[in-house]
Length: 241
Image (cartoon, rainbow, N blue to C red; front, side, top):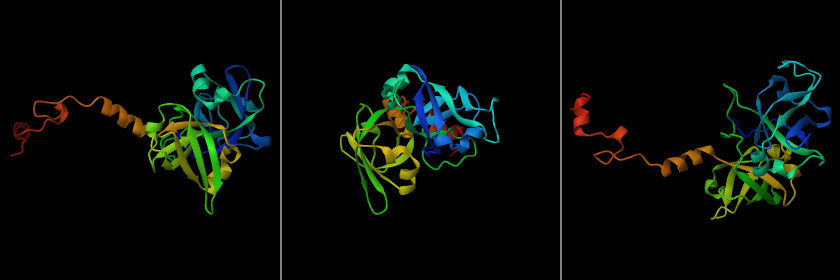
């Protein structure tokens, strides 16, 4: 589980058809690397990947001082490559800039929204316009099934970044977000060009509501669900009246 608050940028390159390495930029350290252990989850452009090994000189499973690790190696599955923008890269291509966020720990602040790291599909940047106080980015929705989770003033994760939908096209084919300067400068949104692909994850709360509506509770003899079948007899049995 993540919050959608990016904690660093890294370069992603493919080692082979399924393994990727994510390393820090220009030798700069990533603060959260020191708290990672083998098997931990990291959101890479919003995609939940598992740390399989570390890059650098540290050799143990945890490095409290955060020294010696310049990145990590993770594996991807065919489903991940098919559903996300990671599949738009391949061995032999140059490094791509990715947003990074370690998984949420007990006691951490939840400053964004609940992000699972399970991408629903891909979108693409249509335009990015600066305003006096923010950047307004408009995205096209490329993958089916995402539109129903787009709600004005609702949450959306774009490349793992927790953003608020400012407005969306009625059929959900495109949407617009306003990005504050800090977020724009601290993420790879600043490097997007028109037509570039992005990973999209809808709000998990909306998905659960949708699923519950598909399977409404069975009705009891008085028209309510069995668990909520309150009647005069039920109240009398439990000491009311």
